Image (tube, rainbow, N blue to C red; front, side, top):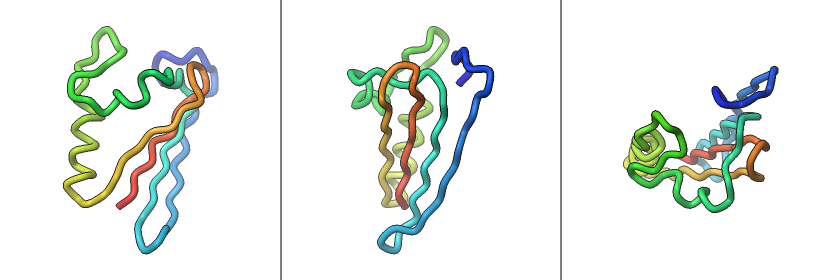
Length: 88
């Protein structure tokens, strides 16, 4: 979101119950994720930021997996934001 040129930066959090599990969707209207990077964003050390280290999403995914859940991401591409989905 920090890199987004949008004047109205928005993060939306939705929670629902799905098949006895908690589904958390975190969406933003930020810079989005290039299709070629969607499968890589959770990899250790992967980053598109100059000052990034690539630890945050990787560590988050490991924590969710350790709790028996899943973490995925969806983005329609650059400039179209992203949605992270956690199911626990």
